[in-house]
Amino acid sequence: MPVVTIRWEGIEQWENSRHQVDRILEKHTGHNQYPATKSLPPIIFGVDISEEGIKELKALDGVVVRENED
Image (cartoon, rainbow, N blue to C red; front, side, top):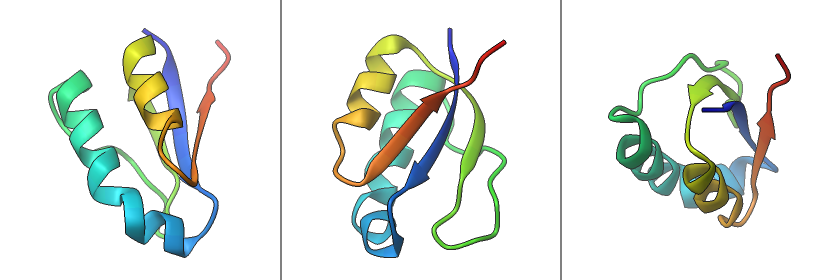
């Protein structure tokens, strides 16, 4: 599975979609606690997630998903 970094375009987008992101992570990985920066909006990193999960995350408005290179 790809490892991704998840960030938001701004604080408003984070406020509007953070719970949806948590639900998608829980659905596809079994948990939603990942290392993240303390900035607002945070940047979540080290997420091992399926291609289907990546597509669901990318479909959310203001969510930016970057697949990490090996």
